[in-house]
Length: 217
Image (cartoon, rainbow, N blue to C red; front, side, top):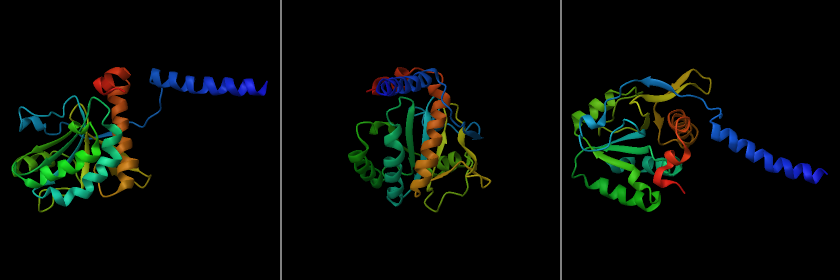
């Protein structure tokens, strides 16, 4: 009798959890909006990627992208590989100088480990003025460095709003810029917060097939 009860629980438990997921009754912590109407990248690049209608993680590599190689590989392993299956997710890295030889080198290295969804990681060239304007449209904790780059990543939602969390770890600090040198920040903050934004704007309003599109496996 006990064996039958255990077998029934083993069957019903996962099934019940699956039903809750399907209905959207999953608890998640909504992320705060820290900045509305972030400057749209399409303002500068008419025929390229747009923030709108996508859930974006963006970074700034400046004039010397190689100096951010460690940060990018951290981002790739901890965040990009976990989210690249979603149709509306994209990673965008901005750099300066379209003939910058360092970009091709970084792309080649990342492509070897990022997998077949690497096309979801966009590398977009902006000039110094465009880079500064875009960065200044965000809420940040520091200025761009001397190479017009940053160690931080940012979340931009489908409505061009910058997202993050308030009162992180109950120490009274808001988080809206995520340090790419910190695996802890990437795993427990950036990944979690991006997933929460994704749940809010995608999971609760679309089917699994719509969310994954052609990437569904």
